[in-house]
Length: 592
Image (cartoon, helix red, strand yellow):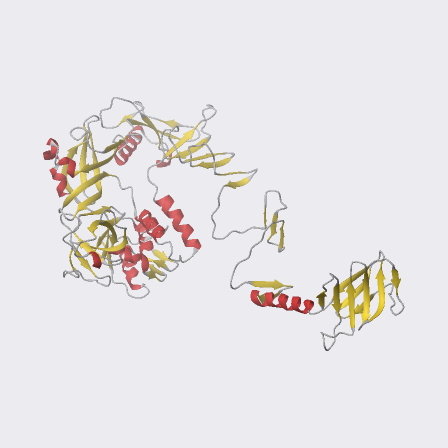
C-alpha cells in the first residue's frame, strides 16, 4: 500500500511513501454498492503524521485488478495506540462535481456528457459497452455521483447495468464478471458457514389459466411442474389472460406456463452465502472451495441444491479483500441487493454540513433511495370475508404476517402504513377523514387554511392573509426580517427603530414624580420648562400653567374656572387630547 497527497491524480510512483506498518486493512466492494477501505494504523507508525483527511491510500482490491485509490474521509481517535482510517474509492469525488443540464440520445453519449457538461475540471472518464439508443435528460444541475444512480431518471435507472470504478475511469457494464465454471454444493459440505437459503418464493408448479367474461381455459393436467424434486407441494395460480388476445390452445397455454417457470426460476431458492476464507483454511472441506479464490466481483457461481435436485446460478455480490495478505477474507454469493442509491444515502448522511441544492431534490432522492433501493418484499391479496373475491392488498417485508415489521394495507375504505408490525398505524388515508399522518415532509405545501386541532389556538388563512394565534410565547429570530405595515415594507431593524423613536418621544413628555404622581408636559420650545402641564395624583388631576393651577378634577369636585369641557369633540393639550366619551367620562389620549 502507498500514501499520496490529496491533490494526486497519478499513482504510478510511491507518492509520500509506502505504508508497510499497518496492523490491519481490508477493502469491501459490493456490486453497484459501497466501495471502501478501512485500515488500522499505530500512532507510532512511520506514516502516522502523513495520514491526513483527504489524502489518498492506494491498495490492491482483488487478485486481478489494478491497485485502486481511496480518499481518507475519517480518522478515529486512538484506541490502544491504534487509529482506524476510513477511505472511499476516489470515484466518490464525483459527488462534488456538478453537471449542467443536458440531453443525450444513447447510453454512451449520456456517459460522455457527464464529463463534457461538468462545471470546472472533471478528471474522470466515462464509457460503456451498452448500445442502448434511448434518450437521457438531465433537467437540473446535479452531482455526477447522483446522476449515475440516485434519483429516478439517473443513468442506472434509465439504462441499467453494473458499474466498475478503475482509478479515474468509470465504466458501465451490461453485466460485470464472467462464468468461470465454479460449482459448489449448497448446504452439504459447508454447513458450519454463514448461509441463508430463502425458499419463501419457491413454488413446485403453476396452475395456468386464461379467462374472459365468458370462458376459462385451463390444462387437462391442470398443473405444470417445476423441474426439481420436492418433498412438498406449493402451486402458483398463474393468470395468463393478458398474454393472449383470444383464447389460447392448450399447447399455447402450456408453452407459456413452462416459459414462465424457466424465466423466473420459481422452483429455485434464493441464495445468500457468505464464505469466510479464514474459516475455510481450517476446514477439511477447503479443497472443495479453493476455486472460489479465483472469482471476482460479478462472477457467476453455480450452486447445487441436492435436496431439490436443482442448480441455481448465484453472483459474487460482495468481496472483502485483505491487501496486506493479498487474499480474500470473504465473498458473498447471492442476488444483487445493494445499489448506488443506498451508497449515496450514506454519503449524504456523512456530509451533513454540505448544503443541498434544493429541498425538492432532497425529497426526490429520499424517495428514490427508499423505493429504488428496496429489494425483496412480499405482496398478498386477501379475501378477508371469505366470499371468494379478493378485497385487500397487503405489502410487507416478510411473508409471515406474524414477523412482518413494515406493512402497507389497501382496501376500498383507504390505506394505512405501519412500521411496528401493525401495533400502530402512523400514516393512512380515508375518503371521510382525508390524509392522516404522524409526520409529513414536503418541499412545497399548497393549502387554503392551516389550523390547530381545536381551530382556535392557531388559525392561518393563506387565501385571505389572516393569522390568529392564542399563544403564551412568540419568538421571531432573524438578521434580515421585514415587517409589512399596511402594505409598506420596512426592514426589521428600521421598524424597530421607529418604535423606539416613538417611545423616546413619549417619555420626553412624561415625568414620574418622587411622590408617585405623573406629570404630562406640554410641547414647548424648551421641553424642560413647559408652560402647560397636567399632573395626575391618587387624589386628583391638575391642569397647570407654569406654577398656577388652572383647573382641578378630583374627589372634592371639579374646578373649571378657566377650562371648558366640550360635550362633543375633544380638548387638545399637545401632545395629548381629552376625548369626551358617550358615558360622560373623559379619556386622555397621546397623539404625538
